[in-house]
Length: 365
Image 1 (cartoon, rainbow, N blue to C red):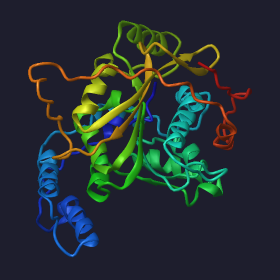
Image 2: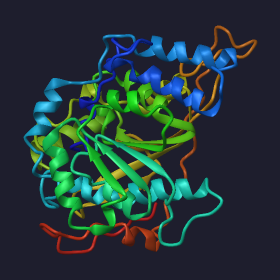
Image 3: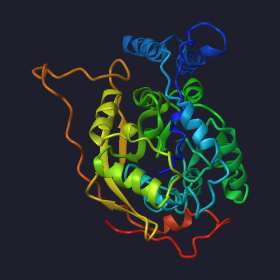
Image 4: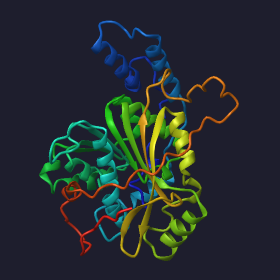
């Protein structure tokens, strides 16, 4: 699937960041200011101080998640985002399951919500927002959404389409920005991050996840949808989808960059996340609809939460007696399929271009 993507466009090359003044010192400055604002003294605990230096070591690297080939690839499609019968048609229909998956998961974690605006009060970062296909419905559910994408033409398209709905004016904002810049400006700022159809395009997935960790608040949620790395995903996701029936443009995906759920879970847990759910997804090109499936052999969705641990992100220390043995936990059981409540209808964008002709529907698991 064409990604919302531009996953690969986000990079975290913060090698120049230091505790000195200057344009690249924003990350540490913002963190220190946060401590000073809540206390008249510098961080009191050794853990807090170690966390700051861990953060500096984490980003003192020339590693990058940006992939110039991916940028060129999706730059050519920047005007196609809201063509519902075009290259991004599968992403439009994916909203029928990914929006309620995000919504219902978050509602189950909250004690109360505002009727009609169930996600009100939550700050969501949509990484690789593209033309805003996912940012808009999340905004209609009441969330305050920041969509970032380094391709300026994508942001122009997103801003243009947002202008058709006055409700989104104060709820959704877009920035032509890299994930690196969000880390610098927004340490522990967001309640939720969504990276939908993104991670299969990044050049450095581990760095990408660590960047997400930094901008999430403690116990914040990370939602990822992506493609498994199996023989079946190669046949159906590349040969059939790209070369035979042309659901997405040829060359959109590279099978070598697909991510098995076990590998993604391991990277998440090593970076300070706890994986809560891994759900299989299936796209039917005949009906143009997505459904939840027990099998994760093709597409899948992940929900993970940021855990607070000593020393910040990084591999957790093994428990006594586990040295020398794998500490990777099994994949979580499949979560229940999301309920197609009235919120899904309310979250839909006004149809401005190229209607499907029939109303999309949700398929139950």
